[in-house]
Length: 297
Image (tube, rainbow, N blue to C red; front, side, top):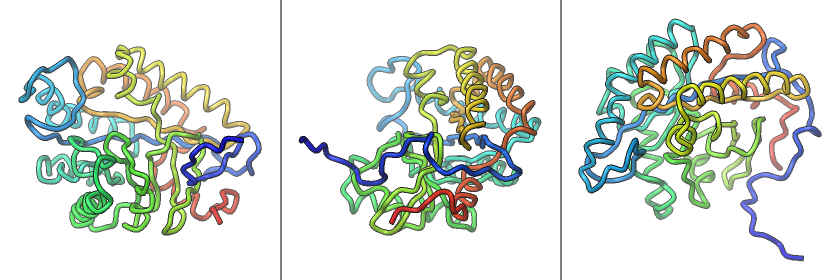
């Protein structure tokens, strides 16, 4: 029998055969928003493209992405305030030098700040272990100094991992990762430094794969979120579930996309009494104390 190479981080488990539990308040569906605040190098490195940009410096796409920090994220902040939505902010550490007023505005809301690397112009999977360890340490120290607390969670730029990323994250003091989109429930993962919780972060209800990858329109992306929410709300009668919504201000902060996004978030808020509207870090706190979610041996 052929044995395929395995990551060894978790074992197979059917969602229909797991212990049952409930989120706070007896809720069955936990919903959180992951807002990506990102800064990019000018004239080099990685970055999403609205259209083929040609040789560097790629003014078209650099300026389009910068719109998110200068305009889009502020419009979204107003929307989050109006809807009274808690947010998990997935922040490049470079944002603190580039747009400190933006980071301060989300801090004032009481939002959770999640580690998201130094910049999305790079991916940590291409680095040596020493270089990756330095990247995590540098990004973490910026967030710790600015926020006064150790960040609890991590999302790698471009969801890029090396074979040792979970081990390095746990060693750096992280409690959970958003990198692994393999489940609708939080799952404890094995690392060489102890258990690390994987909290579901979407690659479908996510504006990058939808709008950049599949070229979905604003209404199509909003419908993806709404249909995903409505279906998961029904499914959660059988198992407690987590639905994340992944957003980037340079995409959904554009006026016409913001309008469609607002409509679907209003729909979700109409079910506020039926769901746990929360932050990723609060999901970790619950799972860390929940005996029905076994930690790996």
